[in-house]
Structure formats: C-alpha cells, structure tokens
Length: 148
Image (cartoon, rainbow, N blue to C red):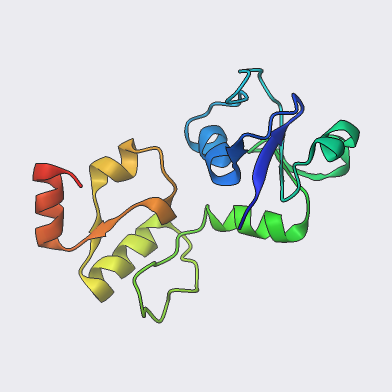
C-alpha cells in the first residue's frame, strides 16, 4: 500500500513502514526531516499540502503505544499486520494466519519448513518480523560467515 507518515510539523517525507520502524523499533519519535519531537503521526494515503493545512489530528483514532493515528480502518489493519507473527514461506498452509507469539512462529518455521531466523539479525536488526529473512541450516551458516 502507498501510505505515508505525516507529523504535525507538516512533513510527509517518510513512507509509513519507515515511520513505524523509527517509532516502534528504534524508539525515535522525531520527525525524520526537521527532528521535531512528535507525540503522534498520522498514517494516511493522502498527504496533499491542502489537506495538511486543514488536518485535525485529534479527529483520528490513535494507538497510544505507537503514537500513531490512522486515517481509516484499512490503514489501521495494514499497520497492525506489521506487528503480527506470520509465516512468509511460499505455499505454506499457515501463511495467512498469524501466530500468537514469536516462539510459535519459530517452532512452525523449524518443524514445518526446516528454516529459522538468524538470532543476531532477529534481536539486533531494526526490522519487523515480516522483514526478517529465514534460512535453512546451510544458508544460515553462510549468512553468519559472509552476510547477505
């Protein structure tokens, strides 16, 4: 989806995934352009200048833990999907169903597909679970030796 994160400062230069990555994973709640501290940002599909001038941030639903407001329910649904534990292995029967925990997803990946996350990347790389690569044993050994 083509969404953008918009701050009260008016900057709409970061895509919605990068906006969420900064806020949720890196703990950085500043505007990536002007560095103003932002209590919340709006994730929207329309960041036109005219809209930004008349925008009433408080009218939109807010997720307090993220400091994010949603322009509509479809956007909220897409944002929350980033935080789900889903199998991304092609042709997996469980692909569309979120797991309840990272532990469940890791077990599924190992016992159904013989794949696993790199623990260093999983815990040290600022990325959502859906952005993390999964590896077979040989691929993980290569990844640890040489990187990707």
